Length: 77
Image (cartoon, rainbow, N blue to C red; front, top):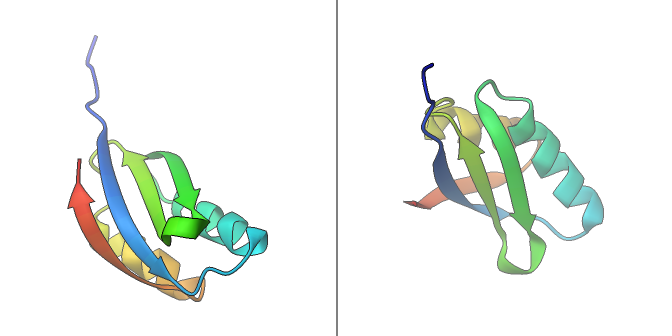
């Protein structure tokens, strides 16, 4: 049985102001192939994405841009 390693990517997300923004960010990132979970922290202005190596950070940033948010990577944990 093959075990898939998960990776966590932390993104700074600009422009989040309310609970609705949390939902939009979770949906934008959660719809990407390979994403296993999204933890959006409104007060910290970031999203922590748990994924299986896909999608790329570039794809995550683009998905957020299409949802109306600018973002940048913080670190990979």
